[in-house]
Length: 375
Image (cartoon, rainbow, N blue to C red):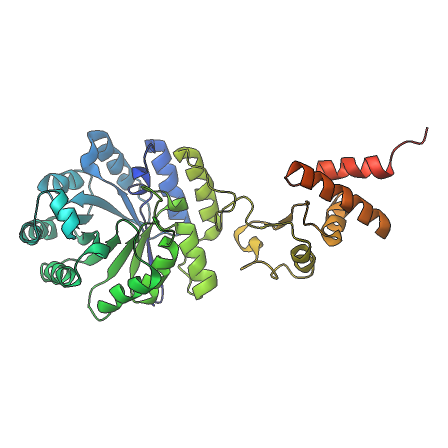
């Protein structure tokens, strides 16, 4: 694995392609600003050919003087290149259909793709400082054909090759095999994962471990269908599972996650890794007792590392230790038999209602059991 994996965020391009998601210019500038603050080194900021408004928005983002490298996405057409140039972009990612199914779907063949690549790349290299060649649907492309495409792009001066798992069919083993084939090539390779089978984060880590230099991600995994590999998940996995820091601030990623929920209208699951509302919450009595002794006993990392706190949810599975801790926060101390009596009431309420019991409800149960007036 490279010393510092290169993270590319494509929330402003592939994230906004999620059905029904539209970012205003204000939204885009806010997202870009937080990504810059988080330390993301490269952003794919949009597809200029979409509209004149999109072209102007991208031009505005580029003009802000952010620290990250700004890259435009384009199809393999001169019209797309011209639109990218008008934004002031000096970097472009040109996508080519690689698989037979993608070529057939647009009525083209492999010969057309190779000839078009020669024509488009020759011109792009004259007009842009950095040209990335994207192999769309690389994961379903005949390996020999993909080798031919990669070698052709390198011979034409491509600066980076993006291999896309466009419909998310790969797994960590097939990803390692794919990037292992190109490990000795003297050009950086990028992985672009989709999450259709729920493996985008794992596949991205596998790509890095097999020699990929870069990966393109989105905040919250926002994207088409089941989305993309999630920025915050990959960053956390690199830090806490692989032990290889990306240099990206996870606390800022949490703020980004909240922002994206708001501006996209797509809410995260409460159990979504890293950013979910309840991923550091516990109810099991065994877990809570251990967590009171050592916060790392049932956490992959200390929640305080990313500005969060672990919490106890009282309910059917709770034990005395968690209840005593919650009561202590309220300034309440009970005798052992009283704790057991109150816990029984908490469990009964939780079981009947099929939900957790709030602190306010625990206090009400406490008052009902032990503070009832004798008058």
